[in-house]
Length: 195
Ligand SMILES: [Zn+2]
Image (cartoon, rainbow, N blue to C red; front, side, top):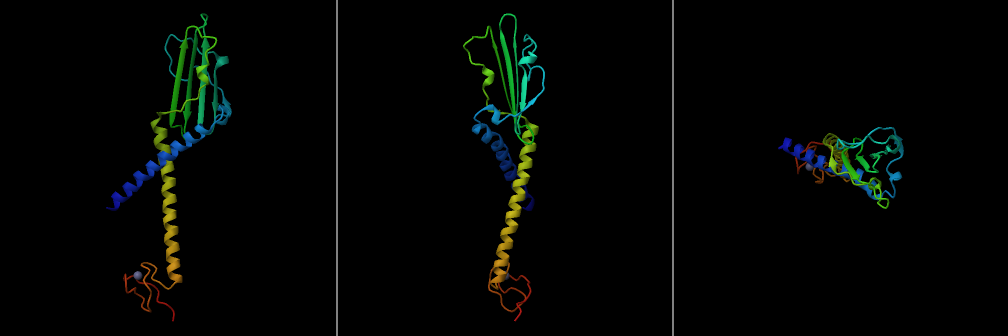
């Protein structure tokens, strides 16, 4: 029974950890007014951020950039060939401390319509799981939640115990204490009251 109880507590902690993991990504992403709220540091990269069809030309180094934030990373690359065909790909990784989700987009237009919005300027919610990061983050946040729960439980027990002692009640069951060193209600041994 004890093992089952700890197993269930572990599952609940892991689910709680997974929810914290989600919140770390979704809350900043939904609040971001612009991409600069999520990404700050430019990172030097080269090439396409994901696997692209083999007929694509190499990414244009001048049109390739990556930015890094605390919980987000984004890598965009573009290429325009001699026929004015447009190729672009974007990856956004999200999660803290490890990246737990990714979103990948790619577009190919022949040729790029002058009026069309650059599809790579859109920041999409990363929702494809990266399992190693997702599980590690969930386990980490789960441990934190578990420790907080244990600390909360200890603190409450301590408070109840000292309240009962101050009121001359049995610290374990709250029954009024007599002069005996054994509680007449629950049988717990405690220090007899000084008379
Ligand atoms: Zn008692």
